[in-house]
Amino acid sequence: MTQIPSELLIYVLNLACAEDIYDIVQKFRLAQVYVYWRAVALDHPTFWARIRIKTSKDAILLPSALAHSVGATLDVEIIWKHCSHLATILPDAEQHAVVAALLAPAQRLRLGRFCFQYSYAMQGSLIPLLGAGLDFPALTNLEIQGVYGAQGSLQLRLGASSVRNLALSHVNVASWDTLIIPSLKRLYMKTPLGRETVWLLTTILSRCTVLRELEWNNPTPTHVPLDVLVQHSGSLARQLHILRLGVDVGPYDVLRFINLHRAPLDPIHDITVGVWTGHQIGGEMLQLLPEVLRGTSSLLDLRVDTDETIVIRDESGRIRRMVIWNPNHAWGISELWVTLATHYAVDKSLQSLRMRTLDWAGFTDGFSKRSPISLTVGHISLCGDLEYDTIKDETWGSDTRPPSRPPGILNIPSLGRLVLSLDGDTVGNPESIVSVINRVRKILQLIDCDSDASGRVEVCIADAGLPRGEELPTRETLLHGFSGKWDLCPHCIGS
Image (cartoon, rainbow, N blue to C red; front, side, top):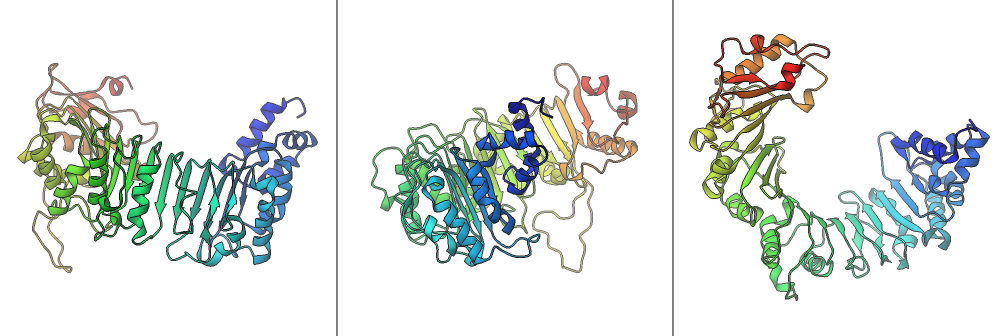
């Protein structure tokens, strides 16, 4: 084992910790396998600089790990919350010993990333470290993650002039001035703030001039207009690239405000908004959609990821996601499609669609009203049946099961390529080749399309859920009895 170069060995040791590179106990185990391994590990301080304190054993080994990491920038995670696999949380004496070790200037001044996850009253022991106004000159990443209702004695107060990434969830902050700094690039915020919410949001957008990513989940008081507290004449968040807004923030007001103050700039590249419900496209959604899609060019791609998530991409690559936060609701696909077609001409511009078989009824209804004349590529995830139970405005009693109705015809006039794949949640449960063939044939029977200039519509079934090792069916087996417009793609034929 002594023949392995030290650089290669330390790489292997890091790989051995790859599943949990912060596991102190695993590092010490590896360092005790051979004398040479120990010598190499001790000669590489960065191997010890990633540290997680979660158990009593971690707390005991912390001083040794810190000593071995001398000179390296520290990356420390502290997890003091109730977990199903942990019988107890660290006792108070061990918590205070951990904090005392990190308080030493030799450690505090080289702390580059600090992540603290806590529950209930577990954050009190961190007050001397995070609530005493100390400076952390090397700190670039700060993550404080509590749980709902866990805000308690800790009042965050520290200096971090180099921080670039900041994530705060359910934590009290005594002073924002030393955290909301111009160099901040990524910010995640989920901390109830009351009336201070509007002031903080506008301060972030005006002060953080290089901010690239903002995730904002703080409820915004509706009775305080955002414009009132902004003392800024220029554009806000000039470099903002990714924006995520939770359902409680009042996404319409926040987006309208940001769009107003970014009018001369290119639209934000990636926007995600939370909505309470999307099964009916009423006043709230009709008000929100113009702000979500403001500045976008022709809409080329539409994707239904789950019952809750719709993703739209325009020809410039900009992405817009809308996520339902109400777990009892799903998107009203037909109504959403017609709305997008009416106001944004998506029926004329859309070129690619990713849908699930679960969404069949919604798209067949929507496409029957406004067919997608430019749609050439369709991806259908085999997830659920094509049949559907209810139609718009129908209601059924809790003791009455609605009848199953046959699926409708999906009208895609310009379809040139169709890709069928097994849904990710069902991978690992492959169907028989006969059931896959029958399912594919049923879908093809229900698609109304013209062939492309070559006179063919390519069909790809390489990932449609065939049993492992099973050869793909031949063109004759899969397409027997169909018109000549359908054909297997070259990849499937070659397989």
